[in-house]
Length: 280
Image 1: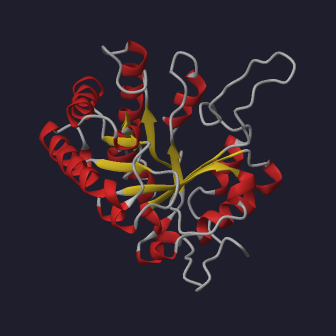
Image 2: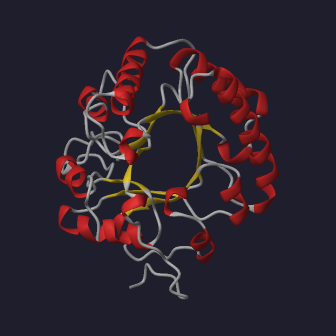
């Protein structure tokens, strides 16, 4: 199996390390109401969802995004404090993360912090998704300083429950030191044709599956079980798989350019596959 490490150190997720969804960013709630409604549906194994208004928080509060954020926040409160207790994964999850573009380390720190403050002030986010995060060793010190600053902002804001959540969007395996700079790392983002033959970095075996997230597009329904198996063996605790490819319609030339901006056609099926009690 090519997705195993050569030393056999890849891990399966167990019952206490259940797979859940990380949504890298649906389309605007006005354009994707069904997608945002699904995130608040009781029982959805959602770890977190990313809010991205205009390559960040935008210039002013967006009423549609405020409504979507409120619904997700209320759904999480019901899961944690409601009469019908859900499994621990779901009850502790459902976070809303503000998307901040790091431009591979080229954005000034004050711009990044300004985006973070806007997300906290307007949408009361539970953390941040730091997209296009540097992956090499030279960028690590600056990312560490940034995540330390964001952790303080989250703690001081009082809006983030559980101390906030930080995700680094490398989209590949970064220098190992990044694993100590945030709560989770996105170590794969790409097509199924690459994912099914991918190999996990051996250093990841020292960390629990909850530290890693994989986003895969173009996964056929017939290969969904195989994709889940790859994620488990590679130690991913958070996933988003979709059959969408992001390619435009070959006839009209129109179509969604972001494959993760909408629900996969097999959404109900994948929800049932990774729900409570589902394990290998």
